[in-house]
Length: 110
Length: 110
Image (cartoon, rainbow over all chains, first blue to last red; front, side):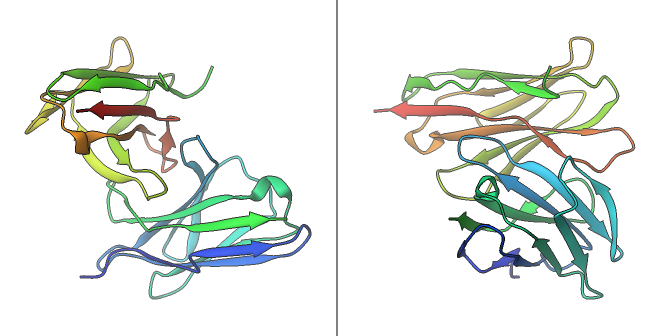
């Protein structure tokens, strides 16, 4: 049984560019959450998707958007990248409260 | 005041020691509580859920004190492999936003 997968593993972008990160949930999970984790900090909740709708959002600007597909996989899009967007982006899937994380995408903005 | 607060540590303990971490939360309506473990440059992994009655899993014991709004994690007979960052997680009642603490770093030495 494959766990949560994310792609790409690493990404380097420049300021002002746009990026799309992808996540496939664990088999049987219908809910996907995205987090941003800066160095030395805990993961910060970006938003959660369920039934292809954004169910709740954290304190992130509209530059951060997402999508969930009928197969429950999800994308995180970030527009107009800033240096401060450099972080580990984690996807977690769940069907109740217990969340299982993917390995993350490490984004560097230069 | 942060929604979830943890002592960042680091806690440096010898093998075999008992170590305890606390985590305080600000929202009295919080519903679900968890401890996650995160190894360096890896994704968080669920360590255990925290129930009102407390729960134990081998060398690990978690407690919830709703009156004082904190949860605790006790690790007995520490192993070198317990070295990691321990993240406290709180989910408010009726919400889906998962709130992580910044984590407590533990180093277990031989």
